Image 1 (cartoon, rainbow, N blue to C red):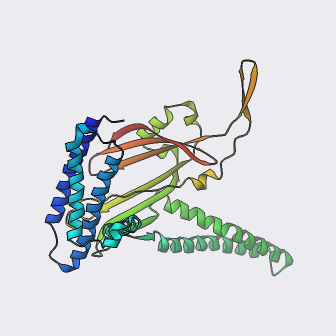
Image 2: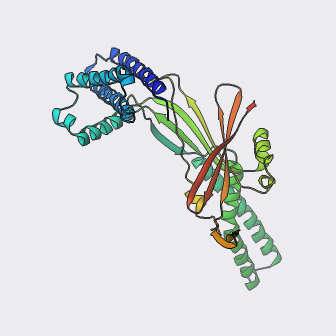
Image 3: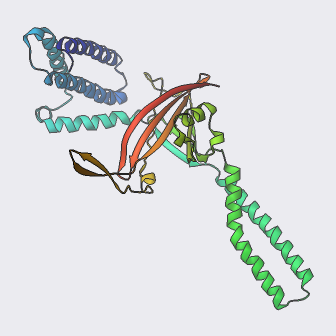
Length: 348
């Protein structure tokens, strides 16, 4: 619980920051009528959201005679924003008087606002033409071997005999068995370590390409881990040195210097991973743990838990890669705990 003096001091500071942001935003009102509607939506939502944040903070504090001036300043800011929205006719009287209508309208405005800053994704799988070439090459190599065996069989077995027919059937049978296997093995060898997808991030407002990305997703060996990551993972406990499966995900992003709208100088991306495909393969815990207390024996059922180590590495324009390790504890039901562990870096 924050002390009242610190609470109101922080709240007044927040009000000043909000005033500064709103003032700068309204100062850059566009003259183009096409952009005016978009500006009004942002202005309406920003004013309402600032007001709601202040009221929410005040609602968690009891009214005190010691901080009447600070409370009055916050309420005065909120009333001023409500008057501003009323003067500009942003919301109808019926909408303002109905909490459900005003809340739903602001949710809609938020989605409309985000539409202009959320990029459209166009994802393309890499290696489609290469895969066709590999398939053709694999088929050609298999046919060379098959024809060689057929010629050898014809040289050994003169004429069309039952023995030659049997040998040819065996050869074609092995061809069907090993053709797809050889093709898949050759494809995995060629695509090993290469990106699997390319992705374009496009500004929905002006259709310009803002960023180009390449995505890797593959299993790797322990020897291919960065040395600093391998040391951190395996110096912790003996069980970490046991055989483990390492899944590598990499996202290489190149952002264009052009195409950013006024007021924006960077992009933010969130990556979500679901552990559901992994959880369903985990074994359920069985058994119980017994304990004694004052001569009474208690029994408690146990559950089997698993720990997943996630190491996130970030490399920007600098020559240093920063890593963050997280320990994720899971069972058959889902994620139980996520704990941030080590932070370390590596100079390239």
